[in-house]
Image 1: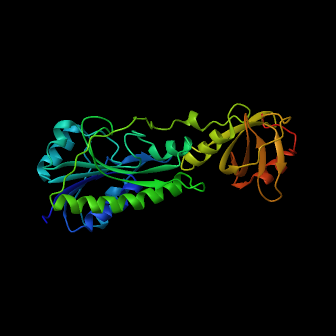
Image 2: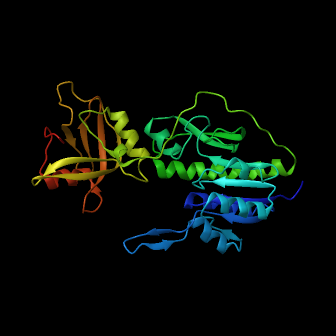
Image 3: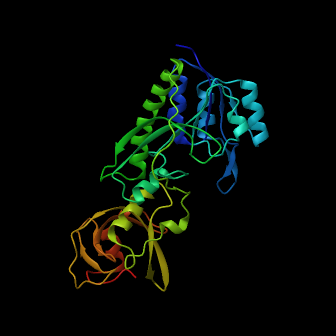
Length: 316
């Protein structure tokens, strides 16, 4: 078993457990690379990336290269055996990938080639997948197209939203990364070409959050509520006091098949102290909790009561 010299690349909070696992693996973390600090808030204060902050806590040398040229120079100077990449947020040029002796491993939260791109967890929920997983694969010049090293499946629970599925995939992924580091240390370096039908998981735009009850089937709306739980949250608009009020749907669930005579967009029933059931283009949805703009989170029933809506009224 050889001790590896590893460079870790990651930026957001979700990458932090993977840095912790890498640092605890017994291998040498030669450096930690994240994107440069970004201005946030009204005062546009520079905010340090979570991975960069964690590197400081772990007494690891951190870098924040601002260009491809800087990134290449940093990695060239570190002379790594292996690169580990988790949500770094930038494509790494092919000439930079060649700097690591064994290559660069990326942890991706889908079963590649399904859901290549920035939002695989969200799109799996939006599309109603029953199974997803984690793929540990070798980076190449494409977008999530490199050969597979290891992969593990994970069932998608009916209770999952983006936050809970992220958490479960992260736990599975850290285990898989630990196993991968062990295998590489022992000289086991599988590189299997991806097989199957590719699909894309592009970054989610605010337009994806718009819900239209009388145009969308209930499963599609539920998928968006679950998949967009970490933002941008699913939302609908409703006329109120002469303007359109935007309402975020924080949680929802399936509802019984509605009466055939009911109109799409109509409130079918109100659960006292709970949610309400609304007719969709097909099927019905139980809207459990909402957050109207400028107000606190509240049960769906309280929201309807505030607008004096009753069963039979329509949310359009």
